[in-house]
Length: 373
Image 1 (cartoon, rainbow, N blue to C red):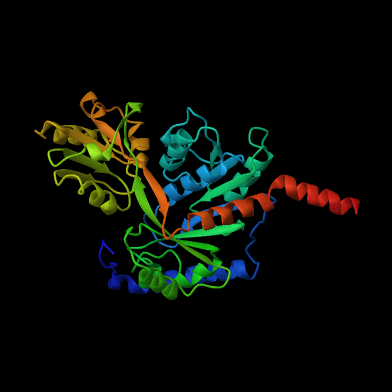
Image 2 (cartoon, helix red, strand yellow):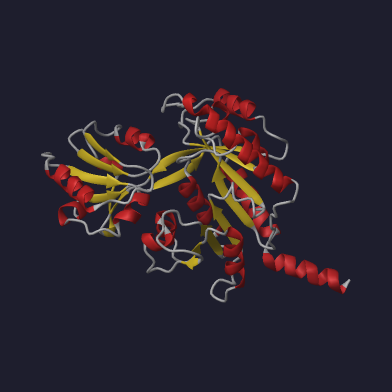
C-alpha cells in the first residue's frame, strides 16, 4: 500500500462523535421510511464511495459508459461539483466546465453521443431525463457520486474503495476520511477495490474480502489503473506514447486531483526528472498560477521537455487563457480501468444482465401483458 498509513486527527474526535450521531440519525430516518427514497422504472447504477477524496469514480464511470453505450442509450447524472450554474442542466457539446463541472465536461467531451446532465437534486434530475423530449430515449442512468444521496434507490449500488486507504482501517470525518461509518457498506451491491498494484497476490485478495465482512448478496472486484498514450492538449489527433519518454525527458506535472501518487509513480518508471506542481482536488487555476506554470516550464533546460496533466485538470484548463509556450508542450494522460484476476467478464455480465432485464421497454411490455391477462 504505497501511500502510507491513513492519517487521523484525534484532536477532532469530539466533532467526529457529533458527526456519527448526525449521520446515524439520517440513515435511520431512511431505513424507517420517514425520509423517502424513490425507485424508478429504469435501470439506475450508482457509482460512489465512503471516503473523501479520489477513489477513481470517473475512470470507472467511463468504463461503464463504454460497456453499455453501444447497446443502450446511456445518461450520466452528476451534481456538477464546483459548477457556476444552478438547477438542472443538460450538457451540450458547447457546454463548459464552469457550466457543468469538470468531470461531466470531461465525459461529455469523450462521449458526445450520451446524455450528460447535472442536478444537485438527483430525483428531479432523473425525472427530467426520463420525461424531457430531448432525453426521453434514455435507457440507463449512471449516477455519479451518489452513495450518500439516499433519496434515490438505485438498482445497483457500486462503492469504490482505494486499496491504499481501506475503509476498515479508517474512521469518520473529521478524525478520519469516512463520510459514513464502514457499516454503511451493507447498502452496496458491488465493492470495487481500486488502484491495486498489478502484482498483488491472491492472499491480498482474501485479506481484503475477510476484512470487509461481505454479505451473501455482495460482489467484490479488484481493479488497477492503466495509462494510454498521451494526447496533445491542442490537437487530439496528436499522440505520444509513454514508451517515448526517457531518462533525459524532463516532465512538468500539473495536477489538481485528490491523489496524484500513482501517476507520479508511473512516470518515474521512465524518468526521475519530474517537477510536480500539485494543487487541491477540483482546483480552478488563477492567472497568477498559470503564469507560475509558464515560468517554471521556461526554466527547464532539457531538450526533451513536456507538461503532463490529467483529463480532469485539462477540463478546467480548457476554460483558461493559456500561454502558447504551455499549450504547445501540454499533453493529457488518460487513465483506464483494468480488472484483475480475470474478473472483467464476470463484472461485465453482472452489469449488462441487470440493464437488459430491467430495461424500460421490457417493464412496459410486462405491465401490458399483465393488464391483458
